[in-house]
Image (spheres, rainbow, N blue to C red):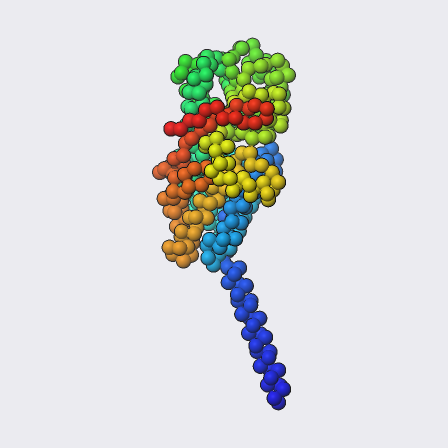
Length: 386
């Protein structure tokens, strides 16, 4: 009888310890909050999307390691939109259906975000675009839509001013006809003409085009002082490569969508030499100085350099997580509505500078840097600070 009592008592102690251990593990594991990351992880824009996803994951890892939202574990719900508007909409519908998702790092391409706007608004969930610059994105009256880069009404007007400052009198413009390239080209054309620049050609193309000989033959006959390509990296690289093969030597200018290694790799080092690309924010070397930890950690973890919108994705993630934390601190549990209001009122000092949003959801950080490509490197030539 005594042995049985001892055995039973021992079992009770064992099970008590095991239960305590399990409870402890559960507390350590915590409840789950998610942010969704929808980016092109396959297809033409995957180099941009993969870098941005990796940067977002770095931010989440930091928050989890430091237990910045006590009692909660943060997870990333990653989805691939492949830069396709239909797929972007479907992925948006998928992520808003998860009640534990409180914010979305929303796409790379303007067209993808535009396609998903109504879905995000109907779900009353905050969506922050890390890179989209089409002006219409923040002009729908939605309180839950934001972007981390300035819009193309600004980028286009500043670009025209910069071209004028360089003494360019005759400009040819090629655009890719999509929700990014066409509106930007329109703004540049309007403002360039306002500075007295003669637009000698304004030619639409399609992203899927492969042969630009007819377009380039027309431009060559006009003999412009410079050529502006309004579109993304891969297509820009094809256009520039074919232009050089046809003996066109004029300098090409292009926007943020062409910033990074992909443009250089597609066109070839010699073909892009001397070309100029605009990019949001201060010079990337400045970012490395002010936020070296991000660049260092990224290199260590992924054995790759940050070359385009990684810092923007990192800051979007930090802003979303800060907003979620603030709601938890104030009311115990987060809600999508509360997170929206936190983002609307946030003032966040991150790797790209200080981010605040105006009443439309546009960033107040409107710095743009123009880079010249030299020996495969982007060297800052002019920083526009409004």
